[in-house]
Amino acid sequence: MDFERHFEIIKRNTIDLITEEDLKKRLKSKKTLRVKLGVDPSRPDLHLGHAVVLKKLREFQNLGHQVVLIIGDFTARIGDPSGRSKTRPMLTKEEVEQNAESYKKQAFKILDPEKTEIRYNSEWLDKLSFYDIIKLSSNYTVARMLERDDFAKRLAKNEPISVSEFMYPLAQAYDSVMVKADIEIGGTDQLFNLLVGRKIQEAYGQEPQVVLTMPIIEGTDGNLKMSKSYDNYIAFEDEPFDMYGKVMSIPDSLILKYMRLATDIPEDTIKTYEEKMKNNSINPRDIKMLLAHEIVTFFHGKEKADYAQNEFIKVFQKKDIPDEINEIAVNSPIKAIDLVMATKSVSSKSEAKRLINQGAVKLNDIKINDPFQLLEIKGDEILRIGKRRFFKLNTN
Image (cartoon, rainbow, N blue to C red; front, top):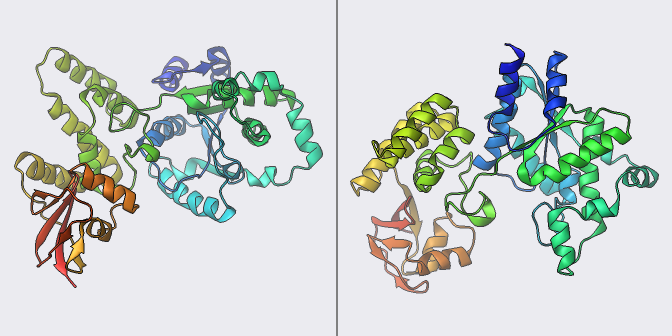
């Protein structure tokens, strides 16, 4: 593949590329580049927001470069302050290890494991002496650190910033030194950290890495960035029907963005859909169904994607109940809030209460309005939570 084509593939859909000249120089050398992504296993589940960066890494793999996936088992215990208004709680070593295993398993749904070098940054960060840490921190000033947007805002509001948070970008930068990264990629919220990496590499006698950032996609609400915290995420391990339904719930304005960033649909095809949407020659719902089918196919295979699509049509267009439905046994009588908890589809009683108060819970298609309403369950009732969760009820 010629150099210009190689460069265009790498640059496609990126936000920041620092610097283009550095990237071109490295590509022209024709050496295998070491492309780094650092991930903190602060949560066990990956979602489509993570897929954006992982898919870019896979492009590098397809072009013959070496992907270095750094599991931040050390830095996760510090907590990345990026975009946060307060210090993040530190995780235990056990929590980090458990999340790391889940992260690797899910990342390999996109990355080629044979072309991925997995490293844990505890390999080198655990070994640093206090002298080493002082030496590392001497290469970056407090003034430069406070240029970071979230730090600057907190300082202006007289909100606390711990010294450990200053250490996070330096630790991430030291990772780049240790793996000799040619390129580091991340979301746009990681730009500051990635740029620190360039500075620290220079201080340790290395050529500064190329910095490449990818867009952050909004979640199913169409407003906030995709996050488990906002309950607007589409997880890699969502069941096919849930995944399909979540994609169908995104606003029309996000269809093309999801196509470009979270699928392998060719750009020419996307531009055709874009033109048809502009001149109203196609219903956006039909394009969204193609998008949902594509995403479910990638994570679960075509057969399950076909099934999810048929079930979606049956439930949402024909107003039927899915063919396959979870059955649960409950005591009767039972409070509405306890019934929702019994499904194990919500994480807490506060979430169950919120869903009931929002009118998102129905028993035999009748809305439940009181979380503490006492319900008589005789058997074969259908409980519906939200748009996509159905349960057939039986008594113990």
